[in-house]
Image (cartoon, rainbow, N blue to C red; front, side, top):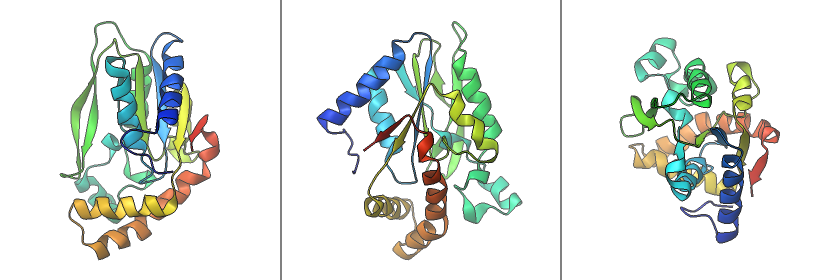
Length: 212
C-alpha cells in the first residue's frame, strides 16, 4: 500500500499502540523503521514522532552518508546510497550512546540535507528525557558486513512494504525534484536504487512487524 502523510485510521491506531507499548516498558526505547528506497519509511517515522510529541525523536540513518568528497576519493560517488557509502561505525556508535542516556545530557545527531546532498553535523538534538528514539533507513535490518549488528540495537524493528510501481514512481519524482532530468532519474533508479532495494528486501524477515 502507499503510505500517505497520515496513515489510514486503523493503521495509525496500530502504529501508535505499538509505539506506546514500547514507551510503557520504561527507560529509553529504540525503534527501527526500515524499507527499500522510496518505501515511505521516513514519512512513517516523521508522522509517528509527531503523533507522540515530545516523547519521541527521529534520527535518520541518512545522516551518516559519507561526504561527497570522500565518496569521490573512494571511487563510490556513482553508487551513493549503497551500503558501503555510509559511516556504519559512526551510526552504530551513536545508537549505542542513545540507548544509555545520561541525565541532563543532550546528544546531537547529523541530518542529511537533500538539497545540498551532504550531511549536517549536530543538527538533531536528543534530550535525555526523550523516551523513544525512532531511526529510519534502508539498511537497519541488513544482515551483511558491518550492518549486521545494527538490528540488535533496537527494541523493535518495523519494515515498510509498498507497491513496486508506487515506490519507483516516488524515487523518480524525488530525483527530479532535486535536479535530475527524467532520463537521469530513471537511470539512477535502475542502476543504484533498485540493486539497493533487492539487498534490503532479502532481510525483510528480520522485522518484528511489517506495515501492510
